[in-house]
Amino acid sequence: MSNVVTLPTRLQKPAPTALYEEIAVYGRVGSLTVVLARRTDQPVGWLHVLLLGSTVGLEIIASLPDDDKGRAVADFVGPAVLRTAELTETEIAAQPEAC
Image 1: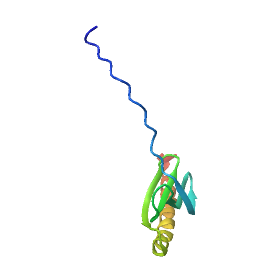
Image 2: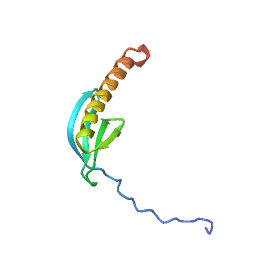
Image 3: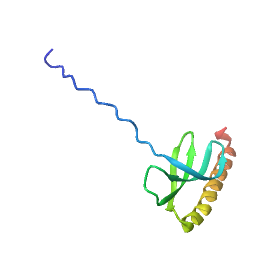
Image 4: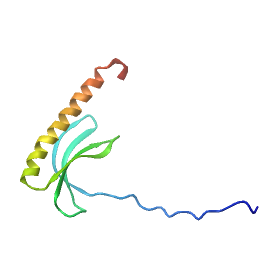
């Protein structure tokens, strides 16, 4: 058949991967974990408050300078994110239609 076109197959590229060094764990709520980490595959300079979960994967919540001031801010942001996750879990569990 002259009207059939065969396209070349694309080579599958590996998914990009980011490597993180865990500095502190602020806590866990259900399947969510809030951590402070630094990327090891990029130049030094940033700390990241991360939300890790089975559904959300890895979500960067805040990026801060990798110095004493950045760490101080991260130590406020991390627990605030954890508390927000706790309150959200409580609110969802209190709704009868959620069960």
